Length: 195
Length: 400
Image (cartoon, rainbow over all chains, first blue to last red; front, side):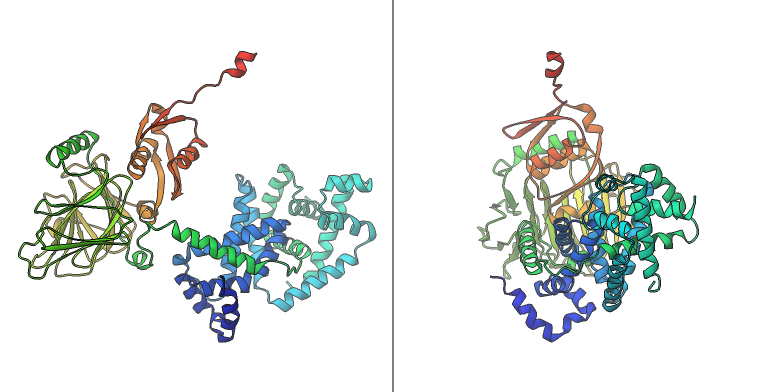
């Protein structure tokens, strides 16, 4: 029933969708092939991004799906500069994510927009550099002092709150804060050669 | 504030552990010097920590669902007649609202006396020989007038009319009436397209040949896509407004029961004047995204202001849109859209203003959405909805 995916793979050979201007033009027309290409190109990556930001896989998938639909709904107004399609999609997704959260305070808004800028900068780095950074971070986590690493992994991999970590490890919340701050600082320092 | 303190706060913020107080400190700090960059770097480091290269996402399945969703969205918009982007390229929207409720009542009664054969719930086309043809917007038909002089056909919600080439009796005054709860498109002889909204009447000639102007009259609301022809200006007349179109597309709404006359231009060029003063020099020109409005009386001055045009033309896409509109005005629009009578016995509610968009939803959904923002009760009996102040639930007090 849905032959588009298969058709799409053949389409890849024709190469034309790699020209982003052409892709945008076809997306504006509502071409299903073009949307298929868009999915193929960005769906995985966008899901990974949103998962890193939201920490919720199901939510990430939903948000990404809504973003594609939103792009389709607004396709007639789609006018983009070269190489900005990924950013555009990401912005839609990020805004959908933020819309779902409370944001009545201006503090919150400024910090959130700075966060968005930080993520957008990441989108621009090319894949090999991005992978390199990921490996660097992974290695540095391994190198963290024992208790610092334990606290850090409980927070980041197990998703525990500071309070839960303090109870689990019988340490004060202050100590958890110190370990977390130290870990992030060290990881950032490792990355700074790239930035 | 030491460096360590602020790092501790940023780390807490990133991990969603920061208190309101810490958020305020962070906000003040981040505004200074190069601090934004420091903040962003820490966010990026955290992003990389959280990032995992998963390839288990169901992209193919997501794409299938995407196709289903967009197809569903498309089919819900059968009433959406301007599916191609052409409309947005030219779109000039002119909205004219006029009259008073008293005038409306009188006019409706008068018409029911003189035209007893018109079914008020049907889309009807009255030719100038008095013949009346009824249409169902969902059923395609082609009808020849009894005299054989003109052929009217309805295809996919778009009406068109062709005079027989040898016919001497040109239909000069066709009256197309679209009842409440319905809408219809019409292609004029010059190729211009008019989409009529619920409860609207358009008077037009079946051919503009040999005329120095293309003139139509409107009561209600319509979206016009006018074929370019500088030799023959296109004019839309309403009770209190004269709109001359300079080759473009626009939307007019001129409901007798509304108290404002207004014109909104999306793109292109339109001149507005009073019906008693239509010399080109006296027309006020509108720029795109401008709205001209008056109280709806002949000879009134027009107030011109800049607006967001979207809410004024969203009805052509099957979307009901309100922009800071009083509930009493919203009620009028709901009545037209859903062909229903709404009695509001909750006076304060009538003055409250709402902003919102509804895409092909039913009336219950819309009322419930508004209810979520303000308290009122409503009940439906037959074709009438009555809005009342909320029922006070005293059950709890009684128990006490």
